[in-house]
Image 1 (tube, rainbow, N blue to C red):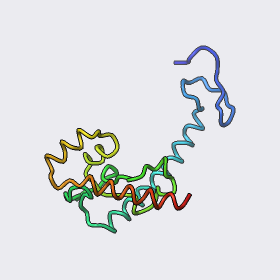
Image 2 (cartoon, rainbow, N blue to C red):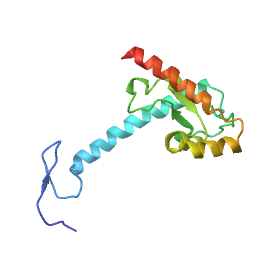
Image 3 (cartoon, one colour):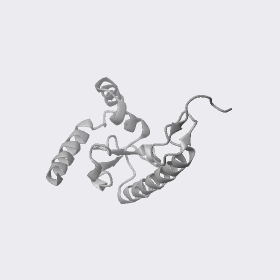
Length: 140
């Protein structure tokens, strides 16, 4: 179905664009290809991290047998601390739910998780974060 109305211009290449997207079809495709290359390098990095450590959760010690991307958490975020994006000390192994708690959980959810799993070590994560922040401040 063709859309009617004013044609937009792609901000990258200048082609006319009659879709709801800001970029034209060609530039969107190229951007997706670049994103795939970007994430492929991160997957290789995660494999190196997994091979270099015991396959257990940093927080609880639960075994991680079939890791996927959700089992690797950056202590310092990749966006705010880009120099530590591929720093092996900035990545920890965790269960998928622990990763959710680190990124999106609040204090109440973390406390409930700690009550159910007494071996959970949120203090260790806080100490690691503070140490990495000190290292990062030396780089800038």
